[in-house]
Amino acid sequence: MEDGLRGTQGERSGAPTVIVVMGVAGSGKSTIGRSLAARLGWEHVDGDAFHSARNIAKMRSGTPLSAADRRPWMDRLADWIRARLAEGRPGVLACSALKRDDRDRLAGGRAGVVIVHLDGDRDLIARRMRDRSGHFFDAGLLDSQFRELEPPASDEDVLSVSVAGSPEAVTDDILAALERMGVEPAGSGD
Image 1 (cartoon, helix red, strand yellow):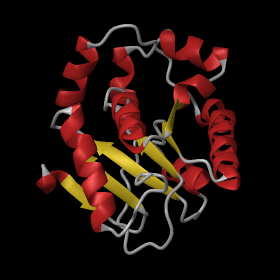
Image 2 (cartoon, rainbow, N blue to C red):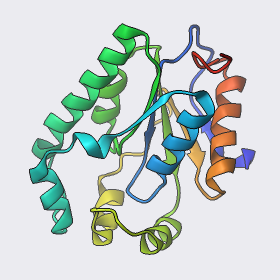
Image 3 (tube, helix red, strand yellow):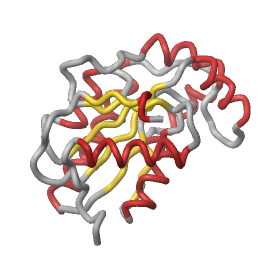
Image 4 (cartoon, one colour):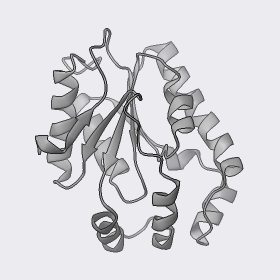
């Protein structure tokens, strides 16, 4: 699975307190986020819990969110991250963060934030979406997610990981990549 890793992050000092797991709908953000949090002993929060009722209704109806719809949501997520960092409480946040601006707002250039991009091709993700149930996201919006996605650029501080493997393998890959980058997540050895 190592061949699916691409990390742009160089050596870091200090331990991350927040890991943001990002990607298109169906890429496994919630599953991988929960797995990472469990392995690290950290709290996991799903970004979907921060959406307004209006945003959820739009997505359920098959209407993509606009930048104006996403802005207050991103602000709430950034506030959560700032609070975690200020309190020194580690956490894993799963959210789409499809745009570079979203990722910049969430990380804010803080060394305490690591962004992990769950990268997969459309066919694999569409197949996974067809197999899941109980989620409000309309699978028909997947194409709009891929159109909206601005893949992390080489100058962004983002770790990209292939989602082709099992959730356990993807989690192992993320933890190994963090270790290779010299990042020892806070609380992981406790």
